[in-house]
Length: 155
Image (cartoon, rainbow, N blue to C red; front, side, top):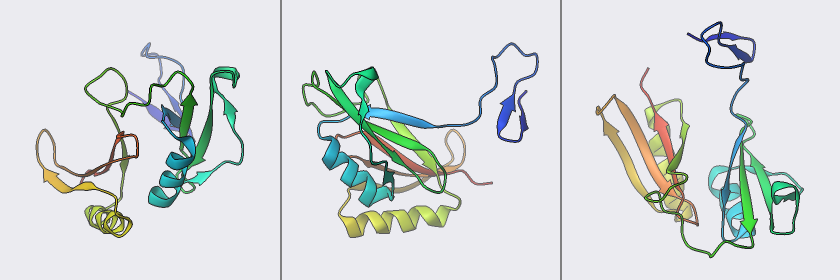
């Protein structure tokens, strides 16, 4: 059983590991860093840090940029890698299946769907389901076909 103290989660003597303080970022390899960064800024309102990061400590084979979600503080890293053959992401292969961000109310999913419609971002519409638990989800994809979800879990 976890206990939260301030911003650090302690795990007691359960043997599950040292403390964690929260989610920081995830990174994906993209075909065009600048186009993807512009998309994430426009569609999700992320803010780009004004620096490039060497890919694994060296720009010899690529680089990354970091975009932050200002209210929640998590980041999305977008990486260029010279060895990337340029194919679209595909959750049927090993790697990232999807990334989901929670929204506070079911109505927020409808607002996001309308926002995507205004921007011309394709999406699957809001789906409400009870299987395996009650939740509502709005699925969409980034320019490299990475599946993204906005999800609401009723309270």
